[in-house]
Length: 202
Image (tube, rainbow, N blue to C red; front, side, top):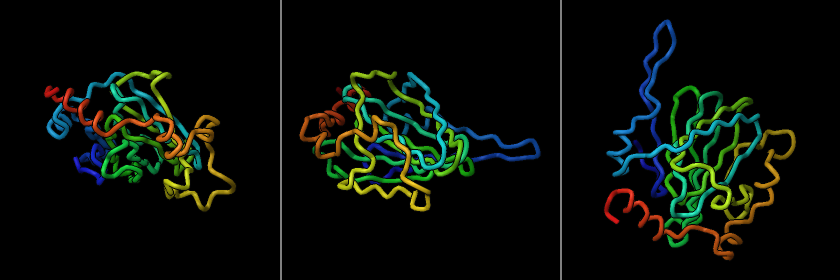
């Protein structure tokens, strides 16, 4: 696994074995993740979304604890996957990183509890799989507007005819500063403490 600049985010590119039948790869290895994270990723729910080109989903996050860690891969097509540090008090608060996930190199992205996540579909029928550490809980889940100019995420959709496609919920989500001022964002110290609990230290 390769760590990103934002603490709590890693990418993983599996080895692929191809022959005349097709391709085989190990998309997720629990032991390798445990070695990197210091704890096992407990998969409570697997989500699948299919999006047409130009769709943006996110930026989504959940209250910590327990939060919701995600391991994201693109089974078909291509997406630009984005992780945003929304943890108040983090040294990288307000920054974002983007990783292309596609059905060629099969790269995946792990996003720890307390980080924001979203993506843009770069192809039609972009099919995304998420392994989630907790199940869906509407009362604990929130969003940041992905077009927040203060965040300045560089969505690669400049050649689209028209605006990117967002759900009404994402389009009406608050900016990062509005969510912070409303006390909706996770605190960095709470996220670190929760990871310590997962590692058996808390």
